[in-house]
Image 1 (cartoon, rainbow, N blue to C red):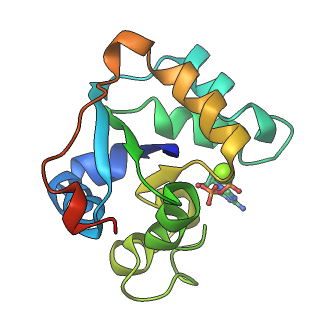
Image 2: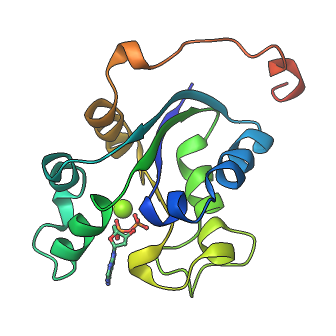
Image 3: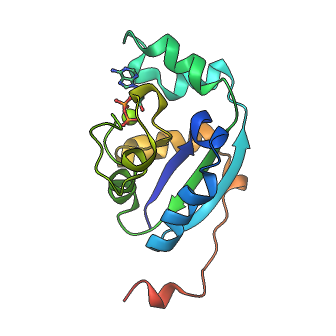
Length: 149
Ligand code: DAT
Ligand code: MG
């Protein structure tokens, strides 16, 4: 089964949106397999956003993501990587559809509430960067047959 890495960013935590956000992935039918509150170090932030290190917004992005705790999560399910990106919405909240997390809650691109892995290779890299194997639970939800045929 596919897994993705999601993180409620400092703005989402500060604004009390954690429960609402987790609820969207739960009610979709995806399964939580890892969860922790993290005060992100600069080293972790720079590794996580390494692909953007030459971009002008990189220093501000690192300052932001290290400014207050984030809720780091791993979610599992059929097609969860692409589906989570749809649930999250496009990068700029002003362009994100209503009904998506960024569309419903955000305004500025630098305060877009949540991160989600964008492809299978980045999901694998980000899960390994944020979680040890022992921090992830392999469990069987009793409702599986009501979500999957
Ligand atoms: P996404 O988070 O949708 O995968 P991304 O990987 O292109 O988007 O960028 C990572 C984060 O960097 C994004 O969530 C917010 C910030 N960011 C991206 N483009 C930006 C810009 N033009 N100005 C300020 N921050 C930006
Ligand atoms: Mg990205």
